[in-house]
Image (tube, rainbow over all chains, first blue to last red; front, top):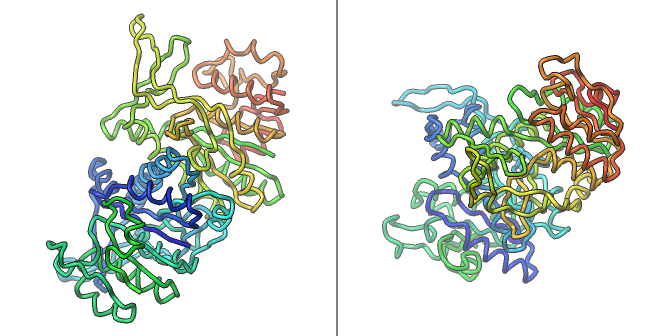
Length: 267
Length: 267
C-alpha cells in the first residue's frame, strides 16, 4: 500500500501526480491519494470578504481559526473545487476515482476543539466557536471496500467529530494517520519544495536522508509547514510505516521519483 | 429501494428530510438521497461577481450556462457546502452517510453538450465552452457496494462526460435515472411546494393524483421547475418505477408523508 499526500498550496500542480499515479495503478500498485486545498481556501475566503485568520496556540502551533462560515468556505474549496478537480483529472485518464472527505464514512474521526487558547500581542485569549480538531482515529472500512473493488479513493479534510460535526484538521497529519492505519510501505508527501531544506532559499541545501530515529534533531531546521510535515512523518514512522519521502509535486513523475529516492527520505 | 430527491432551492430545509430518512433507515428501508444546491450556487455566484446566466435553448428548455468558472462555483456549492452539510446532518444522527457526485465512480454518465443554440432577443446564437450535459447512463456499481455495506449514499451533480469531464446536469432528471436504474418501488421529489399546483399562488389547487398514463396532459399546467419534475417523473415511470410523489420538504416527516399520499402522487 502506498499513501500519497499532495499539498494544496498555490503553485502546486496536480497533473504530474495524477498522471504518475494512473501509471503506477496500471502496474497493479494499491494506492490512495490525500490532498489539501489551502491556497484555494485562502483565495476563496478573500474573494468572499472573509480573509483567513491564522492563530498561534499557546503551544506554538499555527492553525486556521475556523468559525462556521470559514468551515463552509473550507468545504467548498476542499470537497468542492479541489477534490472534484482531481477526481475529474483521474476520470479523464480512465481511472475510476472516488472523492471523499473525512466526514464520508467517518474516514477521519477526532475530537473537536471548540475553544482554543491563543497568544495575541503577548496575551492569552480564548477563542470559541472553532471547528478545528485533531484526527485520533482512522476508519478504514470504506476505503478498503473501494480499493478492493477497483476504485481509487481521493481523500481530503474535513474530519468528523465524535458528535458528527465537520472539523477542520491538518491534512498532513490526517494523511500520516491513514498511512499508519493501512501500514503503508511508503508515505509520500508532495509539495512545492523538493524536501527539507537547511536554507529555504537554496534548493541545494536539501537534506537527502534522515534516519528515522534522528528525526527529532531536524525539527528545528524545518520552517512553517515543513515542521508539520516532519511531525506527520514521525507519526507514520512510529506506527510502523517503513519509509516517508518529502518531495516536489512539480516534477515529471513526482511519486516515482520520490520512491526512487529524490527528495528527503526518512526511514 | 426508495430514491428521494430534495431540491436545493432557497427556503428548502434539509433537517426534516434527514431526520425522516434516518428513521426509515432504522426500520430497514434501503434508500438513497439525491440533492440539489441551485439556491446556494446562485448566491455564491453573485458573491463572487459571476452572476448566473440562464439561457433558453431553441427547444424551449431553460438551463444554466456553465463555463469553466461557473462549473467550479457549481461544484463548490453542490459537492462542497451542500453535500457535506447533508452528510454532516446524517453523521450527527449516527447515520454513516457517504457524499458523492456523479463524477465519483462515474455514477452519472452522459454526453457533454459543448455548444448550445439559444434564442436571444428572437435571434439564434451559438454559445460555446459550455459544461452542461444530459445523464444517459447510471452506473450503479459504487452505490450498490455502499448500500450493501450499510452506508447511506448522498448524491449530487455534476455528472461525468464520456471523456471524463465534469458536466452540469439537471438533478431531477439524474435522480429519475437513478430511480429507474435501481427499479425503485418509489421515487419521491421534495421541494418548497406541496406538489403540482393548478395555480402556483394557491396551495389548495394541488393535483393530488395523476394516473401515469395521463401525465402528458399535466405538462401545460406545470410552471418552471415543476415541468422538469413532471418530465423526470415520466422517465422514472416509463422505466418501471411504480410510484412517483412530488411533495413538500418543509413539513414534519416529509418522506413518510409523501409515501402516505401527501402531495401529488403519480402512479
